[in-house]
Image (cartoon, rainbow, N blue to C red; front, top):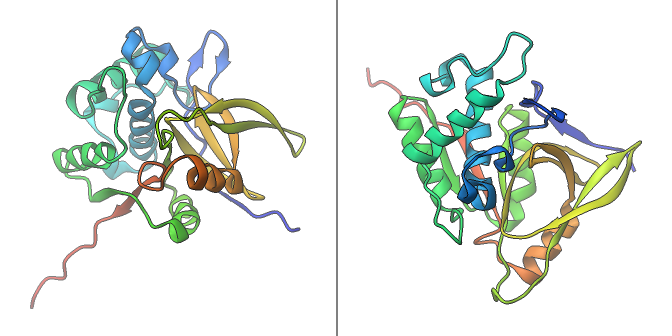
Length: 235
């Protein structure tokens, strides 16, 4: 089987921490206990907007000013302050629950309108189009927010496995549910993702099986970002 590789054009966000360089951001760095427990949606949204701002001149904003160091990595304290601003201004957290997926595109669109950025976000793509839309988004150099939804019925305790990769092999690492991750690449039927500041992989077939048996595509889906279609001027 030929390996298919699709990824972002630019290096993904890297924050210099005491443990070394991260792969994206993590809610575990935040001083707020609510952020530590339920902040994955804020981190996912913040990281995607930050990636866009650092790699597209039209998407940079004052919230991101000075966050990138001279070595290309992100400043740890400024990154945490940036997340606090995203949470305070755009995406609040419901204590004990977190962030409903459908609120994230709403918050992104408020951000885009405020800064006059010609993009829009929407939630919930049909099941048959999910994989192709993720590929298309990565090809346009846009990371994808993926929701691993809560169990339905909620009393189930099933989780989805995340993998680490070593020498082309995938090994079980952790299991999650009710969690947001950022997709940064696709290879050989696996999604490369950022979660808790680390690089993991999700088997696409296992994700589909998890959603069909233990969750729903209403809550396990993607936040899709696309450029606004400009209206043609009438002559």
